[in-house]
Image 1: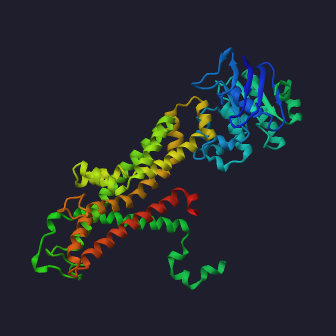
Image 2: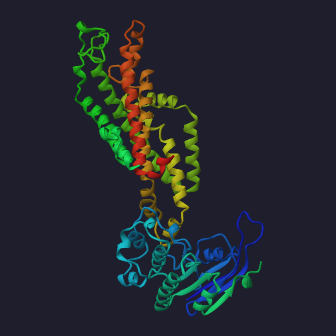
Length: 204
Length: 287
């Protein structure tokens, strides 16, 4: 399994300069890669391009040699920094999870989600609790590649470790690809097999 | 502050002790009760029972005839109640029809951007023509009567709700949970049903109720001008236009009471709508 980005160039319509220029990236499910970059360097934009959120860019992104599918469940899923934005405020948590897949009890346990949280609304849970839901939801059996964009930045150190350990366990079990985007060097050093600096691969 | 509850005024006034939610619920209950009572009363009044009685012509208000009698001796209270019931029924038909138009247009607009610009243009077009003119045109075009008026009002009052729904749906469509839903492979129709509709249902309900007062007022004014309901029906507009001829002879009650009753009905709808909005969408209560 391989997620390959070839000659990616991107600029926002209002901007004059390119944010990303001729970025080449090859990711697979053998190694966990950490992507490091300063604030505003285009990390999140690159993630959105890799996961198919942004469609208007130069270059190409292929997954197993095929372009990213435009219909149906997307094999490359992106986890956001802010879980509260990706949940319908009028939905209870069990409905939020069910939108993606029928989550098993073991998975709930693995992520430390209590059954009583399932009947609550997103506003009634804390950021850490919501992020557990957000991560678990993206771990649909059809997900082949997971991109975590500053997934744990807003959480404290202990919650960070708990969530990341659970994710890594499932990622290894299912042989999924995993890209961790962060500006926390220590975290990347601990978790990732290899690290890439965005400024090294970005030709701006 | 604890001493406040022992205040003389609040001990004897149960309303002062209620919290805002109870008060709002009470207001909604009362207004809806009065409106339903008016409609039910009017349904029990048979038009044939409003008979002419030339022994009791042009009588001022009394306990026997609360709203007085007209130049043919008909009891004005009965006529007014029947007219109000008719107005509310036409208002209901027109409001529900316009809401359906608004919902369809707003959702169709969210599917395709070209259709969306067309709908925005259509809203502007309908808003730029005076309502009353369009209602008269449509009403005459459809042959007048209750059907013509209802359609006339329905086809002119969908604009504001369409605008609100269109804006709301646009905002929800750009939200990240809708984008994520698409990434989970959900179809547009699924998203519209499960994500968007529950979030705009408040606007739909409140919007429909708030079209009522406009619909009733416009129905009455078109009928008053003679383009709406036929003169033999006891509509408020008919009553008011007939009373014009007798005002000069001093029969003030012919216009005052039916006019006042219409105003109260319209106000009741407005109060009910505003309070239901407060209940369903608490954040709007601070506006």
